[in-house]
Image 1: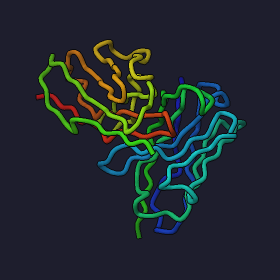
Image 2 (image 1 turned 30 degrees about the vertical axis):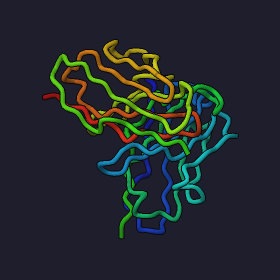
Image 3 (image 1 turned 180 degrees about the vertical axis):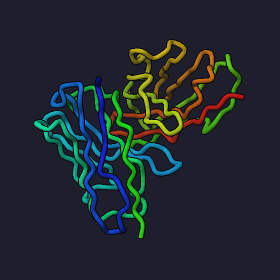
Length: 123
Length: 106
């Protein structure tokens, strides 16, 4: 079964750090680009970050640029999001999502999503 | 940055009704637009890709079309299980989701 499972969420103080993980299974992880998408409580979807299948192309939303780092470990079939200098406005459910293509320059669609992991930034 | 607007923000319709949601891009995005359904407490689910292509396994009552920078998502006959929020997403330049349309059944 094709599956993505996020972990690593929790309660963190403003200015703190957290590392999210996404475990992929049931497909050839190294062939697909991956994304992080978040959703603040009661709000809409916000794309956070993208990494191509090779890891060579990486993009961030302006709201997290310079604070968040996306990475992947092909051997472990895992996607990560290192979040530093966290702010209250980063409070959200964080989803990892597979892009059906492997390249930023191809047609794209987020065809597989995990269930999400909740990050709460509060003192 | 490409901005996406969606209308209406919410709607209520009867079972069997035809439901239409529109999404407008702030600039030309070609057909680089997808539609997602998100049911309460669940992750989003891809319904339509590249403006008008139905994702495998998605019921044929869902459809999408494009006219210039205006995109339309249609449910031809609303079913109770279609209660959800629907989002458009552009990927012409990075990714932007529309603000969503909440659909419920009268």
